Image 1 (cartoon, one colour):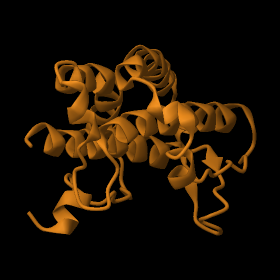
Image 2 (cartoon, rainbow, N blue to C red):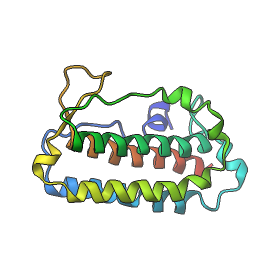
Image 3 (cartoon, one colour):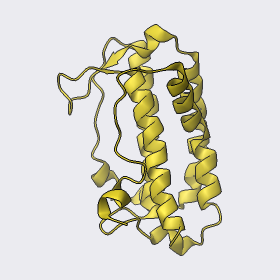
Length: 174
């Protein structure tokens, strides 16, 4: 498998310009089921499997699982900010620095119950939103001048769930 396919096992994120109701429902379902799919994939892994990487220079399984928690926790905060403030500026974070922090040494299985809670909240919030809520804006300092809304956020984190589950599936097959 080539490095690009290893890096993006489900393809790169592509922002949709038209959001069908089916697309929204599919994205919410992916977000809702992410923790269960993660648990089914990694719960039987021996501890050494978490040290495997999906590609040369890529994160290992433990780092991916902890990153998913951090990223999706940020998604929940970003969603709530956008639902309660007018076009908030969201805070980026240095994910490659976060992966070096000591909490990434914790057992990755401890992430699963926390992700269940985060994803339950995300799915509920996205499900309870109406069309005007989905058009609410947020601003990302790394993307100045680009219109970002909650449909973009929904699509991004749906893709992000599948993206890292794809990485973990590569590790699982090793």
